[in-house]
Length: 474
Image (cartoon, rainbow, N blue to C red; front, side, top):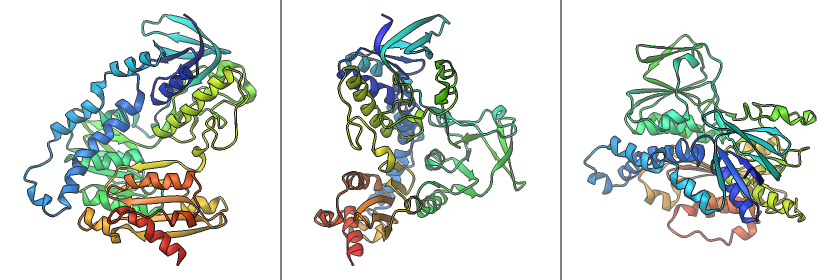
């Protein structure tokens, strides 16, 4: 069969969810994938990276509680950590994901998909053979991103690691250098330091520059406490591999030598060779290799049959946001195919409203960073009249019981005109589990006067909500 209602290019978490929602809406759907079904998150990002982080984090958590600390008599079993990572990544085998697609009624074609005309996709198999698929209603691009490699002398020739290599290694080398202070850089610095490697991270700016400044400062201290070296305000000018080692020359003339170099300096859209140039919609400005701009229903403006969902549209480069977008896109594609009216208003099930100012994210460092909504800087830039409330999380009874010497910080951003929370940042051990309450408060636009009646259980770390509201009310 070469004709479908919807063709999805890319079978990562986003593509799977688009296909599933559209199929549930009554459409015939095919998904095209050249690599593993399940995509980056399942095999080289979310799942393996968190598996690498968790064992050392659990050990440190136990060491911070007297009584448990005295019971620890051994060291971290790195081999067992890597085996657990392999299990989390299903040994890089997508059989279960393929079975899930079949159970959902979605057809799968292995190969590289290229848009070759209006509602037309040409698939190239591994053996070079090609055939053409046509879509009755829509084509959804869900190809995600790949690691961006900066144009630095010798860098590509030195065969640096990206997020794929760093999460799939079968042994932990003695010394790892990391270029970049974003989420991938700080998480892998935390993971490898916990696994016994000597880690040196360098970045031309600060750490986690998109978060509140105190978050990056506390993560830097946490990395140094783990034995990692953190160099800020510097950048590489050249890289050379020789005799199995990588030497990085910095702009201040210093050098760093390591077994491997992880490049974690951002992501680039996987749209090279996608066929955007061939669509013929020049006024839209689509080009292979670029991010794909979309409206809130994930449709490309000016092309009523083309959608771009997940990281490839550059709205919110997070797996959970890609899946959120996918649920909206799958539903709206099915609704439009059935000729139904589509509600474009904010918070409709057909639009990804939360992408704007309610994106939750957890960075699994030590301490963790959990945030949603605006930061102080982004709220002021948007011209919102705000009040900022800061509290020391370590002074809450639940935190002091959670770990000895607990260090944490919380910031609440309040829109003073509407009297609702528009941003929250938590930093501290296990704060990721506090985040969803803040997300609900922001998405629901719950007035602070009503939230005052949401009584936190004692003694838990959620008591921080009471302390924040007490300070706000005075």
